Image (cartoon, rainbow, N blue to C red; front, top):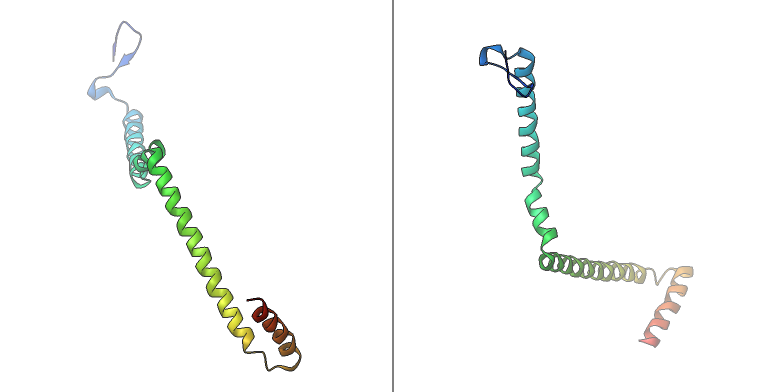
Length: 110
């Protein structure tokens, strides 16, 4: 083991302790895992999205339009199906009278 003027120890290749070599291998493996997970998370794309305001605005605008259109179409389909199913019950004695009144009220106001 050689000692330098700054009180740091330097090791010759043959003098490296086993624990140090093992620790370096373990740290290298951990750094490789971190690098792989950063590549998988597409960190570069996330940073690019947040640093470019124009891209973020366009992305959020398109997401809002898609959500609004999907909600509107979904509501239209569900209410249409509900209206159709309720129209099948017009001939039922008690429920049919009530539904008939609702239908006549809707027809009168439309």
